[in-house]
Image (tube, rainbow, N blue to C red; front, top):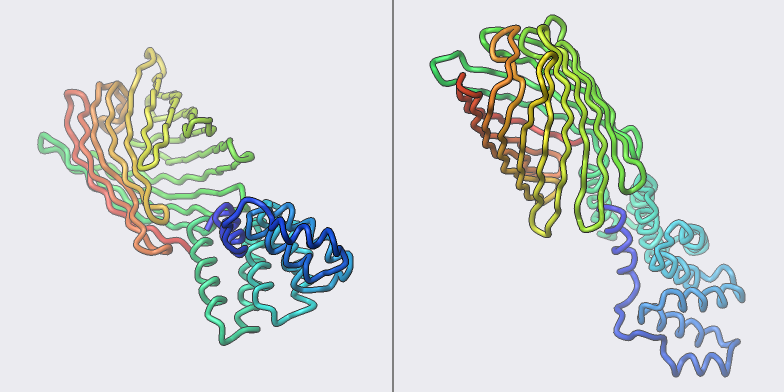
Length: 384
């Protein structure tokens, strides 16, 4: 559950909203008898049911000015603040209500929801565990603990990837094989560190590659990342490779990104710059990328890629991709050549549970007039 979903769940603690204003008759009665706390409490609840959290908050403030430790009024104030999108301010009255009335289950539930909406998932999980011990006969702490763990796995867990690939080449050439291991670990709410190892076999030659990277989110719109990999003594992979990328979400459900790469092979250096624009629709997303690649001593070459993707479930996705253009590729040990290429592939990840998923890929690649490749890949994904 993300922060917006947590906030929606917290707002659902309030009753249904059948009207658009507080009860006028109750308002008149409270105006005539402002010291009557029972009437004012009923008016506050009426405002909350009508979706007037601001008016409800004003009434609860007046009530708490009379008796500041009333758990019902503290709960109402906390719920009103959550409904107004101010969950962090709701924590103090809810924690006070829990201290005054430690067996009041609705207070515990609202407190947990406020912590979720305030972006405090670890504290929400700890309070849920405490609620399970306090109310051992209740089912909701167990259900909530399961939902929180599911959200943690989907949004904030460490991810381990293991993949195997096989590529069949035309013309009776030896097939290609690769084994990859990857780790994606959160450093905090914004940053993630990436690490991996790759063993690649092509043209009866084997290279070993090691990589590390960092991804960071700046506010709600910008992301950036850097990555580097090395393959000591490589004959088919770059000896070293640097990548920098930045992306931004835009109005109209779209996003853009730029990616710069410098790859140093044994025989040549290749610089590339890719620009991508992506449009999001309710059921799918479409992206187009234009890549300019420049091997040393050769003019720049252009490549195009079009992707159609569908996201579903708890992070599952499937993508259909088309590629066309010129690119620099290792066509023999120590030989990097620019060829005109065409490609078609489908790939994705299917999460059977929040913890376990299957990565898959199938594709065809035409490497100029040299050969065609048919690629298959299968991988195991684990969140923990």
